[in-house]
Amino acid sequence: MQLNEKVEIVKSPLNYTGGKYKLLPQILPFFPDKIETFVDIFCGGCNVAINIPAKKIICNDIDSNLIGLFNFFKKSTYETLLPKIKNVINEFNLSDSNEHDYDFYNCTSANGLGNYNRAGFMQLREAFNSLQNKDGNYYLYLYVLIVYAFNNQIRFNSDGAFNLPVGKRDFNIRMQKKLKAFLQALSGKKITFSNKDFTKIKPETLTSKDFVYADPPYLITCASYNEKSWNDNEEKRLLDYLDYLNELKVPFALSNVLSTDNKTNEILNTWLENRNYNCHHLEFSYSNSNYHKKEIAKTDEVLITNY
Image 1 (cartoon, rainbow, N blue to C red):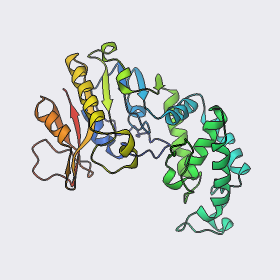
Image 2: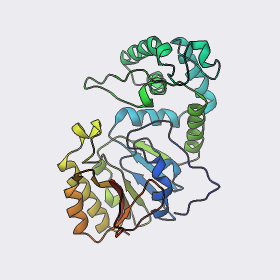
Image 3: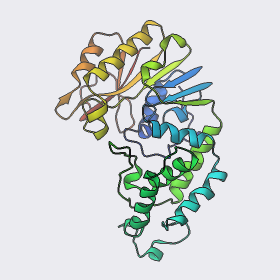
Image 4: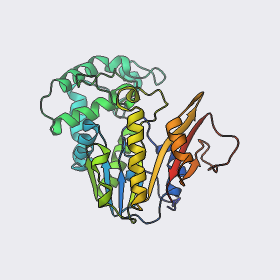
């Protein structure tokens, strides 16, 4: 896929763990130039899919709250959503740094707005967690929670309650621009969001003109979401799924990590050694390296393709 320097890469409004925004300049050039249906089976924050010029896009993720939020965004425009967000901000007496400077809230940019927002944030979190129906109000509250939460992330406990503490920032101009650009890009795409196990997306329904992208939780990293949801069996299930795609001549790309610090993904390494797939090593300097490069980063993040 050719990157047009004049086209600005759209960034997700969600700071989702493992997001690929910073790696897009490296991975997108490896994607096919023409894609009928782009299928992202672990879409996460949607940083990849929102930047793909395919005729049809399918974004899937096992996180029902995430997919529900994207479907909420899909039905919204920035012009209609902005006043609703502002109403929630005012309802819970949260800061609005576009309206007032940090001094107004007795805060500094260095320390952030957490001290001012903590009480209102906790009230919003309690109100959100008490909601019974996952309707528009639910996802509106969820988005505002994410904006004011620690590091703008999403985290639910085992009881299904949002449990992140308050963060340092608010719905500032940067957050507004990200949301506006994302919603505008979303409105211009034929995109479907689904919430199911990735194997439920049947390879038999795809052709050589389609393209599947897989960015699963990384088996050997320490992210908290890996500990419960992703294990050796899940890794093997995914690799079997990709092999089946290859048998059907459906192009795919897999993002993953071969090694980090003193850990190696032996399952992935063995699989790769016994397949005729291409492994592209990625660098955070944004310059591509080939498979045989001797000096690779401490974390060897790769893109594996079957073409």
